[in-house]
Amino acid sequence: MALLETRQLLKHFGGIMAVNDISLTIGEGEIVGMIGPNGSGKSTFVNLLTGLYTPDKGQTLFRGQDITGMQTHRITSIGISRTFQNLRVFQNVSVLTNILIGRHCQIDNPLWKIFLRPLAARKTEKEGREKAINFLKLANLADRMDEMAKNLPYGEQRLLEICRALASEPALLLLDEPCAGMNPVEMDTLAEFVRKIKAAGTTVFIIEHNMRFIMSVAERIIVLNMGKKFMEGNPKEIQADSGVQRIYLGEEEENPC
Ligand SMILES: Nc1ncnc2c1ncn2[C@@H]1O[C@H](COP(=O)(O)OP(=O)(O)OP(=O)(O)O)[C@@H](O)[C@H]1O
Ligand SMILES: [Mg+2]
View 1 (tube, helix red, strand yellow):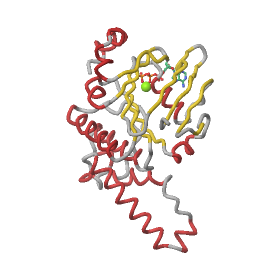
View 2 (cartoon, helix red, strand yellow; view 1 turned 90 degrees about the horizontal axis):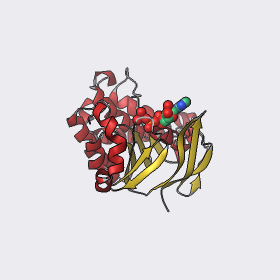
View 3 (cartoon, helix red, strand yellow; view 1 turned 90 degrees about the vertical axis):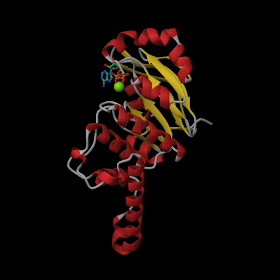
View 4 (tube, helix red, strand yellow; view 1 turned 120 degrees about the horizontal axis):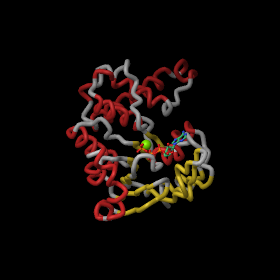
C-alpha cells in the first residue's frame, strides 16, 4: 500500500482549474519530486494534501485512510508535516526554540501531568530538546542553536524551517520550494539533509524549480502543467523528455537555476 495516494484530485478557483484530476502515489521511504512552471498547481496540490484547501472532487488516502477534508492539525498529528513556499520562521526567538515550538503539537503534556508528575513532564521535555538538537545536527545548524533565528542567513533559516517541520516526527514531509533563497553551498547541505531525513525513515515530497537540486535528490519526479499531471518518471527520463523541456523553455530564461 502506498504511504499516500491521491485519486483524481481537483480544485478550482472560479474559472481557474488549479489542480485538475491528479492521481499519484508516494511510496514509503521514497524521495519524490514535483516540478512544473509557475502557476501549474504545485502549491495548491500540497495545500490540498495538508487540509489547507478542500478539494472540489477526488480523494486523498494516507496509509489507506481517507483524509480528504480532514483538518490541518489532525493531518499533522497523523504524520504529515510541511514547509511553505514563503519562509515561516519565528524571527525573534532562538533557533532551538523554533523547533521546540514545532514539537509542541506533538508533546502531549497536559497540565495535570506537569503538576502531578513533574519528573515525567521534565523527561518528555528533555527528550524533545535532544531530538531537536539532533535535527539541527542533520542540517549542520547545531552550533547555531542559541542564536536568534533572524541572525541566520536566509538559506539557513529555510533549513531551520525544515527542522521545525521534522519536530512533529512526520512519516511524510512535504517541502514547497525549499531551495528558494539558498546559495549553492546551502543547497548541497539541503540535499545531504534530505538524504539523511530519508535514511532516518521519513518519506519526502519536494516541490522545486531548481533542476540541478531536484534531479540530484529525487528518485521519481512528477511534472505538472496547467493543473494536470504532464509526466512522471525518473530524473533521467524527465530530463530527456522534449515535452518537459518545451514547457520549461520560457521559464528557464527568467529562472536560470
Ligand atoms: N487562493 C487562491 N485563490 C485564487 N487562485 C489561486 C489561489 N491559489 C492558487 N491560485 C491559482 O491557482 C493556480 C495554481 O497556483 P499554485 O500556487 O498552486 O501554482 P504553483 O505551481 O505553486 O506556482 P509557483 O511555481 O509560482 O509557486 C494559479 O493560477 C494561481 O493563481
Ligand atoms: Mg507554488
